[in-house]
Image (cartoon, rainbow, N blue to C red; front, side, top):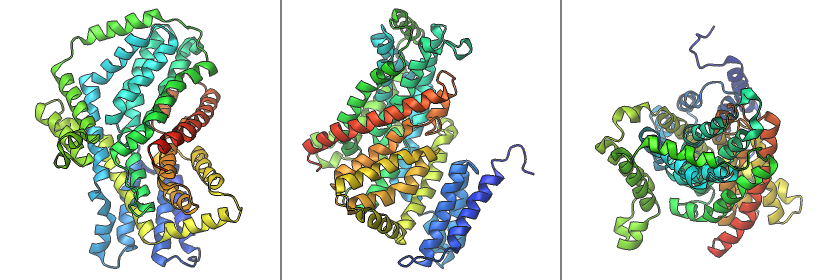
Length: 489
């Protein structure tokens, strides 16, 4: 029997192992090497273990790295096999997210994130709809430097939302969630997928998407922080503008006017006092990161002032450490950063090996042949791909697992069908965040906010489906026109 502190869940682990073994024993298809087929078996078993929550994703990733190294699937030489298994840890995108998560800890530690949230409520909070926009804009402002969307929506914005709802006596145990809490909880959540889509550094799986896009296009498309942000700017702003209103129409709160919310927010700001030294430094680092990620110094002073996005993140963290805003203990205790480093490295490694061993190409050809046989033109064909990718998230409790399992092959297929390359990869990138709207287990933020009890399961799923349609329409129409104007297709 496992100890009470064990992370290991036997049944889902056995199911994952059985799936992997079953795939391994299936006759290797023509066009796939034995090593590629074994790698696929290990990969699918890993994804199954993540979906089934056999262990935390970091622990599963350690086991996967071990299996890849021991099996010799990438090389007969044990040393080379181990180097291949650990090869992705030199990928700068992995370190970008880990370091940025450490930086975002400063928003919570200094109280700057809370201050920003209450400031927007003080400005927009005279009506309940205005509070919704205040929460959404708070999300937007801190998103570029908060790669943990769970920390952003769950640890920074959610407590603000709860304090406002409770100030009106609206709590689930009083069964009066329609008063104001249900609306605010849904706005709190649905701002999260939108802002996650707007910046590479707004959610951890986005750099994985960048890597898969580069692999699928032979590095012909390698999205920079600036390119991603510019491409997602207009559709993201339109989505932020519409989301609080759509939810307001779906679940209108009983309280419409909220003059007390402004005074409540001002009271909280007064309690926080003047901007502290550490908040000021954190704000300065925030500005420095945005300027460097947007390549503003390079545009003004020349290419010599251009920094890699990950280098910029290291600069930001170094400033916070040197000034004492964060200490090394803070960095070490940011478990999600180190956890992300491990699972990101493992999944990128396996996705890379599947590509190098020809499995992605084989799988993509099979899908493409099936779609081509329908006789549909590329717009309809790629629309099917996007919709299947989006709504298959009902079967995933991890955006990372979903992206790793499906994104690479779907990118190759869509590009092979003749879709405009840049527009298609941007649509897929946006969809990887839009899919977070769907369920109460879609991403780490959803169980936090759903668990507060303000929204029933049926209401959550209904709002999620409607918002998925709204966001998808915005990105197809507004995004498509915006990308045309930018010359992306």
